[in-house]
Amino acid sequence: MTSPCPLPAPAARQPTVHGLSQITSSLYISNGVSANNQGMLSSNRITTVINVSAEVVNTFYKDIQYVQVPVADVPSSRLCDFFDPIADHIHSVEMQQGRTLLHCAAGVSRSAALCLAYLMKYHAMSLLDAHAWTKSCRPIIRPNNGFWEQLIHYEFKLFSKNTVHMVNSPVGVIPDIYEKEVHVMMQM
Image (cartoon, rainbow, N blue to C red; front, side, top):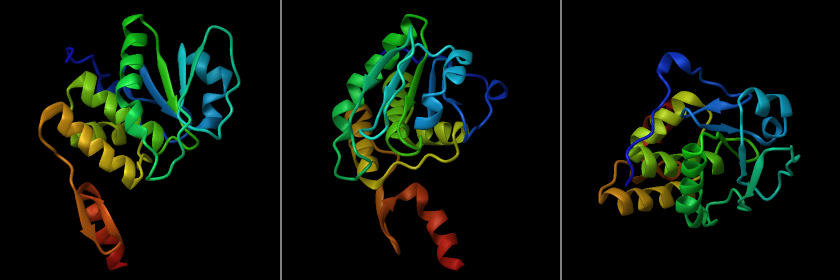
């Protein structure tokens, strides 16, 4: 495990749903449309774009490295096969003073799950803390249940403990961090 990389000060980051959401000093998440916006890439000094989808086609811009992770946003997809390679790639871009943009179609499930894996591996954050941090930067994140199960296994592999658990609820099996939300929804 490497020492944690610096996270931006809370005042320096603004939660965003549109455009690029800054997660760390060198990592951003967005949807596919923003990932193809040359102005946004350039103004945020993005040097690497990681497309975590099979359906979004990137526009290739000069001086930007592109990585494709062709995974569907379905619970049965094995996104976990990419946790270590993508976390390592994001870290290596940062070590070269570069900036990475992780994106999928909406910037909600696949890219968010890979972001959580990176924060656990390179910032030594628990899954619970990585989720809270990422959600504070990009409020719309919500990995699908299959990705949650894979992240829970990955957290155990890294730290030999879990901070998030899958639980039964009136809407099926969900991560326990969504229990309150489901309870409120059921009240309506």
